[in-house]
Length: 239
Image: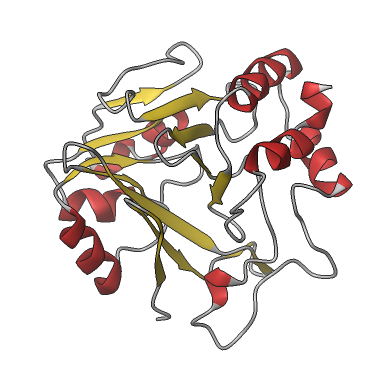
């Protein structure tokens, strides 16, 4: 198995990047993100396998208090993380919780269409916005101190160079790049809407946050002009 590429992106934020192929041929990469909170506890968006290097790095950061699933499809490794850190609060979107009902996982709570603004205790440091109008029911997060947006399927920045750094093959979609600046991305985002009014509301909420960096689950980290990148990808809901 290819080991994760681990990087301290900025103070208190670490990423764990690795290859991930969807539908057997779309090499979009995967990424988990860990944030050390002011309390010393660790918040983890868990979206990749908990390999030994990942585990060792997280354990050095501090005790894991939150394990988060970002949307209805990023739930494959929640059980793996929670078995390793059973004391942590396990949180996901309602659709993911329902998909994992048979696995015996004990969720602390969830985001859902009728529970869009739950509170879990990290909100003073990490903002969240649940996208009820998005097909995959994603949640966007913003680490206030570092001005960093963290998300799963709301925004891509392909090709995923870092996520294939330890692989013998390269990542990316055939014949195209998918960056937030491309017209293709804006059109893709528009087509993934299941409720345009809800998308307008939530896209505007995130656009109003103060962030400069974006850590996506799929594609390379955007280090500068993150808010502009967001506005470009969601232009049909912000114009």
